[in-house]
Image 1 (cartoon, one colour):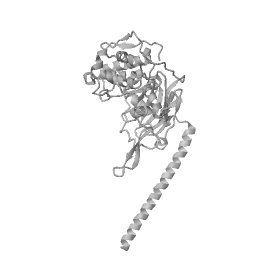
Image 2 (cartoon, helix red, strand yellow; image 1 turned 90 degrees about the vertical axis):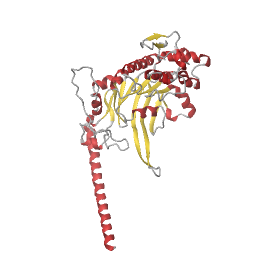
Image 3 (cartoon, one colour; image 1 turned 180 degrees about the vertical axis):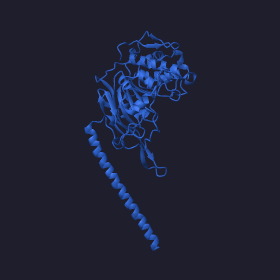
Image 4 (tube, one colour; image 1 turned 90 degrees about the horizontal axis):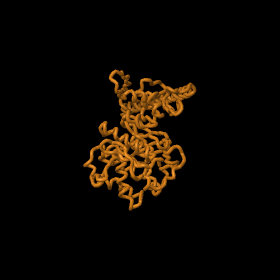
Length: 400
């Protein structure tokens, strides 16, 4: 927990912070946190969805939604995950929480692989890893009052003693900018911003260490977005929370994140500290993405990098670098060889052939020559087989 144990109570009207009379942490058990610098470590995580035939329901392919990503998140920090719609951001967030099965890889939380935990062990871990969904209305039960929505899991996991339950829920609500009399109201009686506060309170009530924020402000007005972002930052400071913040709004990500990862077609193409990646993007896709950030200066001439074409299907991605079909800096090597995800400068990782060493280029060129040679041989064989089949067909017609 953070050193300062005072509850943050936000004034609902002007969104200002006040000091609570009793700390929320008074109700919570001591947290024996391991000494490791990193709370979460993802190693080569893959999530494939099978494509089945319509008749026999056989697997005929896979949608590679997440195709081998790796990153670490330090305790008490925020990692932003950005990319175009359909690149696998939300799938990655849900998979690392074990809301769906993993295809391959490891997700280490406090040094423990959560996909190797048994049912009872996973149940104990659940309160520590939470998620805030994009649409606050569809993620809230319309049949339960707000107090029950926030407190249902608190009772289920015995977060606080029964005699302190009501007071604890009230304090969590105040910490998230909600009033105590809101307990008996239903989700449809609240605005979008208030509903998102309810979702945040529901996650916070379980005393988590890690929260996946899956585009939590994309459905809100700009003014409300700022309030929710400020609330998340306040709560992070107060409770020493760690966030994975998924968004396509780069300005929001720049404001809230300590590190940023850029995804394209299931792969992490670049990762660095926020200041580094925004001041010096390395990957051509990152450069194009960041060039679309609006600048509040009418005299500033923006140099947009327009990407041609649409994102290829994750069920049938291009060979080599997946971005080569839209990249203006594409070379022959990009069409055949998958670029290595490596550290280009201290703390700045990128997967792009533009940063290959001469030794790496020589190695790739040899592999490409062999690949082209094999393709040509296979093409010749296919032509011979086709000619033989056509000749056999003509012979059968003549003999008939």
